[in-house]
Image 1 (cartoon, protein in one colour):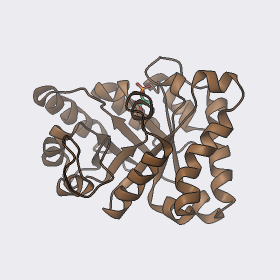
Image 2 (cartoon, rainbow, N blue to C red):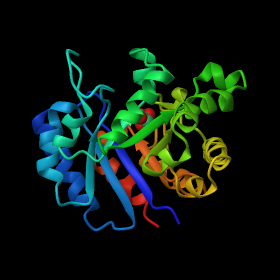
Image 3 (cartoon, rainbow, N blue to C red):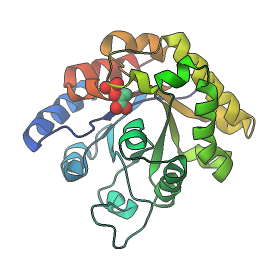
Length: 251
Ligand code: PEP
């Protein structure tokens, strides 16, 4: 039986004062919840704040990106070891905003995936199709290519210490959520594809759904057999909303 995981992706939002209130609300809201795992992926400058407020709690923390290089003359980049200095557990890799706005290819995403694992971070590797791709009937093809950038390159064993997030691009920040059946179909496809390489890894693989998850639709999505929790953007910025989604992940 896989444990559910709910991860907040704060994107480029937050300030010290508002983060303090948000994290306090999340901590209080999930303190008694024991049947699932929780995390927040915050902007780099707030990792220290997340670490000092969350350490010893049942909420882990992480970042939203990293450099594939360990160090060097890469102005503005952040190395994997810098994230482990702040005791990050997770790092989001290949988010569609990184792929789209910052032109990150599958090649770059897979290099980041490897660098994260080498440093002992758990990658949350994002895959998902655009609306045009869905309407052209190539969702599975797109997702398979993105997934294969790590599955074929590093083998199924690499997914033992990773999380996959299926995030249809058309559902991110748009208020349009994939229906539970639409999401389940892609999650099952991902699991089957991994199973072709290693059935045991596929069975244990945590596959999150992301794309306009809210308090009102989380329970139904999380009730689907291959949906193991959520990657939550907008709703993770409001503690009551995020806590309600965390509650929906409880058994
Ligand atoms: C995300 O940023 O990963 C995301 C799913 O955003 P939202 O929940 O706002 O659609």
